[in-house]
Amino acid sequence: MPATTYFAFFLGTVLMVCLDIWQTRGGVISVKKAALWSVFWVVLAALFAASIYQFWDFYAPYSPYTPHQAAMAFTTGYLLEKSLSIDNLFVFAIIFSQYSVPTNVRPRALLYGVIGALVLRMMMIVLGAELLNRYHWTLYLFAAFLIWTGISLFREQDQQEEVNPLPEKLIRRWLPMTRDFHQHHLTMRLNDGKRMATPLVVVIAVIAFMDVLFALDSIPAIFAVTREPFLVLAANVFALLGLRSLYFVLEGLISRFVYLKPALAVIMLFIGVKMLLSTTAWAIETQWSLGFIACIMMLAVIASILKERKSSDVEHKENQTNQV
Image (tube, rainbow, N blue to C red; front, top):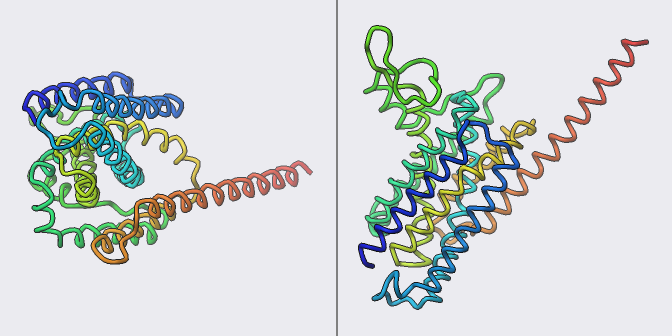
């Protein structure tokens, strides 16, 4: 693959990130706007797949892939990464809830987190599947962490347990930190002249860290689809670029879910088990994973609607009794 192809794709990625920054300016994103931009990113990925089919000989003149094979490999890899990235959205919801991230700060936190995840994923792709296979046992540690998080969610009562993964421990150990968020600032200079990091640094680090945990499952999967590093990279970039908009579609619905926390707990446990079984004969296929998550969230929505309706009926009867 010529270096010019990677350089051109890097410039295109920077332009797309700038576009994403522009469309989320102001810090407030409606569900309708997020849904429209989610469709936009999917269409953009489809157009890129079409350009691969049309100009693959220009992108990679010495590739053993035919234009048809390259376009199919990118499309399959993109759909795989997009499907697996749905798991990340529920984790983002947990992170924002447990760190009490202000609503107007969340778009910027996700932006920085996704950029950090892109850089880390690029490093992982360069190292390749061989390195992941050599240290494959770390997947079991990550699976244990996710299972522990799910159990912690089940045990929570009125107050939430704090997520305290490795990035937070390291950052709080080495960086002095303010107690509160200060808009989009990563650091703040106090009255005494001392500069301190804000909690936004921790949130960004945790988002990027959690995305890499999921990438350890998804990147080996996409290498099974194609061994062409450029196609692996492109599929990851397009999947991550649309992740922010997709999250805010979900976020607009989260506030209406009374039973969201137990649903997220079940999903986290399922993902942990999925990681544990990923290299066994009982490995869970992606379509079954998505089907399970969809069913759990559907049950949570139905149960939430029924509970809200029941609460409204009880409140209505109490009002009638008070009037009498």
